[in-house]
Length: 84
Image 1 (cartoon, rainbow, N blue to C red):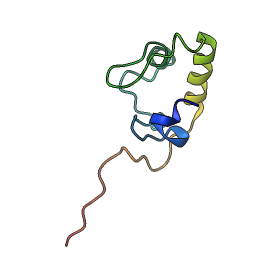
Image 2 (cartoon, helix red, strand yellow; image 1 turned 90 degrees about the horizontal axis):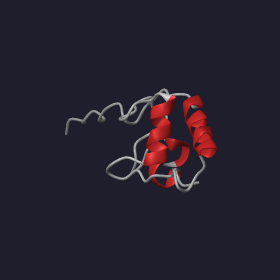
Image 3 (spheres, one colour; image 1 turned 135 degrees about the horizontal axis):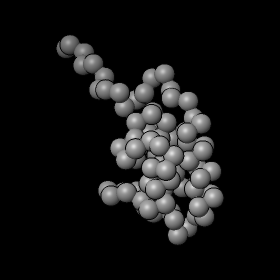
Image 4 (cartoon, helix red, strand yellow; image 1 turned 135 degrees about the vertical axis):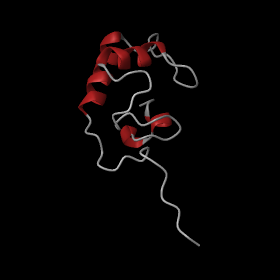
């Protein structure tokens, strides 16, 4: 409910980074993702540890880890420029 405001519908990225492209700035292991949600991260990721229970955060981690990496990752590079 709160994630898509920054990470976009389907968690593919928007203001915040994609959560389904397999790239994790602070580590993609279950514990690292839990810490990111629980404690927050600098430059925009709020801490949800005081809002959500640890059990709820683990459900989010499980959900995110179960998402398939899309075949076309929008963060993989800039589109090629067309010649004028």
